[in-house]
Image (cartoon, rainbow, N blue to C red; front, side, top):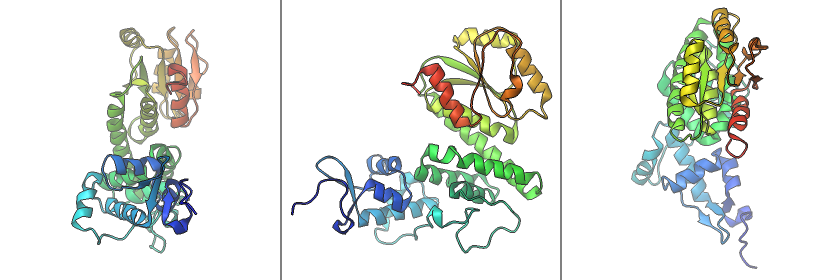
Length: 330
């Protein structure tokens, strides 16, 4: 009987398709390919049709790579560590589905100073990282999660679930309030750095983007800007309300097709809300509004067209980029 060339080889053949490896290790296909092409960490076999096939040794190596990443080793240094220790290495970390709702290992005593509980293991891992009150731990945990689950997999729901859980708990617990402050500082800085990198790859028209809020209230707005830039929209972040005259100068200077506004809940920020309404009530190019406070802008009194985007930052970015760049670019 001839050897099958289809990627769906039976397990007793000792070779597995990429989807089997992803399911067993928790690493997404994009990351596996990057480890192979960019870093040379794994070398799967190929079928005549070009499909990747992984051996049991490959899978064991992937688990060792994950363990090293969990130890804090940079992915660019993992290859050297593996060469120095070809057979020994740290034990593989628990798979996310073996963690409890707080992101802790099953059987580990929970933090008695926190009552936050989440079923999402990715959100739980972020919450767990926030307990140490250090941005270094948050950055390492975040990087591992993005590698395993992909950028969209982390930010579509889990990231904001962790943020919202911290925000709610901070209203009752000073310890959670401290964690929220550190989390927001790290998140805003991380998103700003990613945004700068994403904008280098953007082409086409510039879209001024007014993003209100400070501290933790700015996190979701920064995520909206980053998600838009990752889809190719060249946003121009504005972190404060400008005068109508200044906005018009800016719009004319960059030939903007539209402006965007991201508003957190403005129940305690009436002054900013009134200034934004005054700004948008002037006639001009269309405005796209996102965020929990966006509905407070409708209706406008002038002739400017106002479109309300979905409240979810990623969904809002998707609708915005499709509207301004077209389906083929978004």
